[in-house]
Image 1 (spheres, rainbow, N blue to C red):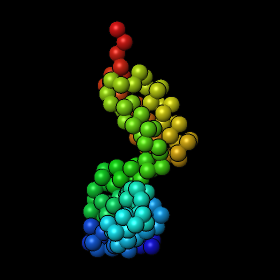
Image 2 (tube, helix red, strand yellow):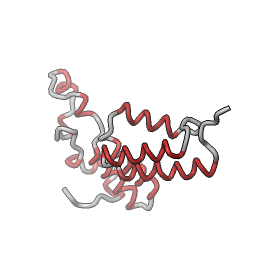
Image 3 (cartoon, rainbow, N blue to C red):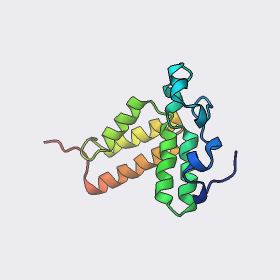
Image 4 (cartoon, rainbow, N blue to C red):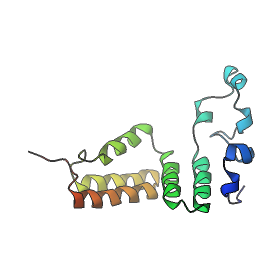
Length: 141
């Protein structure tokens, strides 16, 4: 299924349900209450997949929403990062929470190396530059 998605394909679950697959490859139609009760559907089947986020990014690009597409592409990378680490990154990116530009740059390098999340790492590096210009690092008194 490599064909590109466009605005006419939105929402994918309604227009192209065959393209909506869970982490274990289960189709959307198999995610029923009965399947949950029988133990055939678990949490991993309900989590968003990188593929789903990238499909949404394709649609966003097709209508000129490049910023939204970029956010969705970064989110796709984040699905491969443990939740605790995502929360640490979130905390560091809150203004006034990180001590230095270097702390953000080190985080970006770790994310790039450990998770191959180049888009997210670039975003963190961009934030480091911006935070430095705006003086948004934690102040020491």
